[in-house]
Image 1 (cartoon, rainbow, N blue to C red):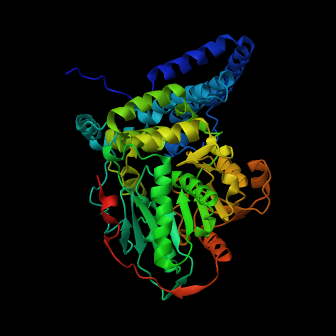
Image 2: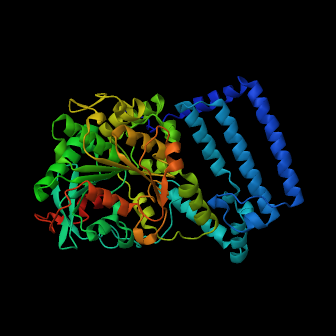
Image 3: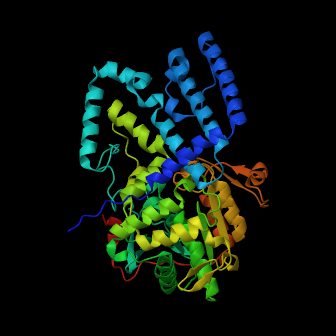
Length: 543
């Protein structure tokens, strides 16, 4: 039997071509390149003047250089400042020769990977914390760290496996542990209903639509961080969709399947159990699917089946993908489609590697330092536990999502995208909508989410922190803050300049919005009926 050549989920030749075009761009802009060189010479002159004089420089906002020695010791300070200056110059140089294209995004992505890798914090001799640790242990940290490296290589899962207490969290016991039950299931999802903790609840139930790439329980971490528990304690009936972890049998499930067989069917199941139209809330890709589902229902004359919808960190306009544009390229999509045809889905480990590369300093190189150089286990993190509990995505879904939505951006046009032959027009949605962006979001840039809110005619709030951490913002923690504003000018920066900043969590602000757009009626608490199994259910436990 002839063996097939292993496939890759990307095209390495496209990366090489992007690098070549960037280099060629230098040659076609000799005047700009000369100006870059002159500025670099001046900046290095200033650097050496400050370094040799011992003059302190401003401490950068970079967590890699948080140790006191990076600021107080002239030797380490000079290493830090030289690295940061060289990095800025290289990024500025590449920026002048690349446009706002996928090729340019690839060049910037590769440069960032290189600069992140060569940071002085990643090497034993130029990291003051590692030098100190090596003296304390007589070098045993490096010996044990090398053993960790060999163990990770031997695992076949790649290097930098995060080392933490494997028993710190148990699904259904210490995480994803809010009491509830699975009350409905099909081939794509289980529907979980949570046990009420109040005698009365709001008439309108809540239904959560998660993304496919991770399990639903980002909103049900440890109890003190659980959005689900907080909502239940606030007197809300909460349902969540728990997607199946798909295998080869699901390879033909596309975006339309997840909309109709997933979200629309879940809405019907919630309505049947509560006799009320639910308030949808959703995160990331789940929000994109929720918007499509609303447009689908509107096209069918069934828009009243949903009372309101909230999209958190979700894009409906993919014209500005920022760094992610590096992967929205014809060559990469073709390579990924060949890869998907081979195995029927994209594996969770491949997705985790992609997301880790986009935040390499936090998710790759910090682990290199901690586990291979310092020999220190990572403290248990419920959010990172969830992040590492990834899920697969079916071949047909990724093909339709990548080409129709990411590459061709068909949602921006009325009837540009179809679900089971039904044209999808986001402008036809009449359901009240609330859009929440996160200010430091590296996946869904906040200003791109803002433009989507304007397109949807939605109310808008900007939360603090990043894509995942900004969602998990319990009021008791009093962190991050958020911004609100009534007017929505075309430019997101103009909105932020006049927006009002609030301390603490956006959660109460959101539930006030839900109350304002609901019936303002209360009903007796709804207990889960026709229980299939306890929450979080089999689908959340699937390997």
